[in-house]
Length: 155
Image (tube, rainbow, N blue to C red; front, side, top):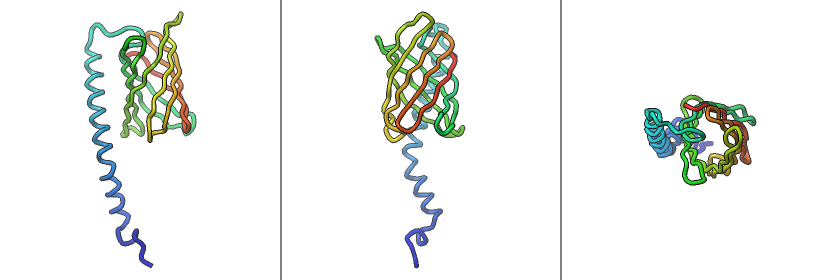
């Protein structure tokens, strides 16, 4: 019996799948270059923001499947809301960037914050809750399918 799979061939199907993913790869690459440009710009700033604002770098880890990777974040302030722009690595070659509005309040030893973002097909709505001081940033994240932690230091 001849199936469509045997007529086309597995290599052709893989190539078609890669072509279908190309727009996403291009968008991720664009997002990466924009993030890196902003990251470098903030790094060369002698008047780097203090507190929660500025550049953060560290790691993320899933407590569900133990996936992990490098994580960078740029936090800027917009009135009472902090805008966190995260850029995560997975398997050293895959990257993913997204933004989260964090409601932050000053505490005796730094800040505590919480927020959420809809990451769509990447897992739906994620909730974030954490604390930071002038040098360390810790947050938990959770969604319907995953939960874990972010740990970063000020850069």
